[in-house]
Image (tube, rainbow, N blue to C red; front, side, top):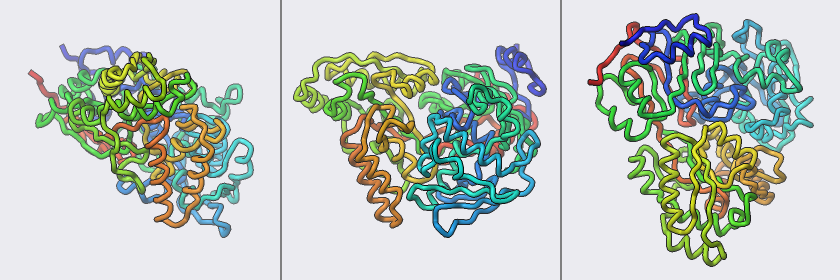
Length: 534
């Protein structure tokens, strides 16, 4: 028996009870999204760096400037109405949008900008390295961001980078502006309110957090006074449904409105069905192997990195297992970004890999392999287990909750893992600064997580971001990619092509090539449309 549940005015406890209903129809003004939310660690934009929390951060917060959702190469105003470049070329003065307010009703002030950017740098969580690219560190950020008028704030930087690059990094989630008056009183033990933001929000985005039950559901209410415009919906519910087959059934029946992260089997089953629409879009997200060079001598040996490149069945994974939903890609810049490499020099060649390992004196080895407990990653992991096994490398697959796998990688408590990465802003340096920078293990880059100290490559990356000639700059990033592609503790395997399933009557969903999901324009038919799957 089906029950129709009202979703407005609920508490966290009521939500938990509602989600236990076998099939609850969704009301017209609330969108229910089915996906895995097991990767969430925190909704603080200074820390949010996973798929779910990163996308939700954009719904909750706004930066000074933002990427045009239709054209990722263009930057437009967000909380800043305008900006001027300083005569020295190393400063930007922003004039805040008139009457811009947070969801609390507090006005957006220069002090909030200073507080937000400074706290993100000082907290030094995973995405802090993005702001570090401007030369802002815990020691230098004070005084670099100053109030110069009631509605103006000036950002100065020491790094040898162009204003256009600083504007680009200011579009990232980590540069979001938070409500200091709400957040500062919630600080505990010098955390700048980071602990409180695990279950709350303090932004100006189209939505605000109503409640959050870890690994179960996240509930967002509309923020009708958002400077970016009120959303079409009264709220959003992100329902944790780890099994893609269950997500497929829920959206097909009309029990959820949006299903994300479905596998090729589920997408194929839904093609041509009148009760759903398949929203397909290119994505810049990459899937790659991350090797911990500090775990043991074998994993720290460049010969192992080289052999690993020949132990991946790239074509089999992309075309047979994932049926073209993903495509083979082997460089750290995704297709569509300036300077991205399109060549794929590596193929599955077990005999060659075995010779490389034998010549290096690497015999049969067992490696722990923590993997996100999601079908996509488990499917890829099982293929890798089979192909690596042919060369005497036993991969011990250890499925786990996404947030736990991320935590292990960031703390170096792993040997080999399968990860994804998406650019934080539209510039080749977004990925280069993650994969090709680690001088001294001080920045939270992917290279640091691999335990790979690379001062020379770090210098080359710094030279690339400083380069003002466009053609030369692209050439520098191409050269960096070839070096990383040839020898590094990263094996890039795939580039995504996202497919999101919308229930009948759901319109307005948009996802940029950078993977940012926009929910503010989502609308639904006034009456839910139910469909029988019999």
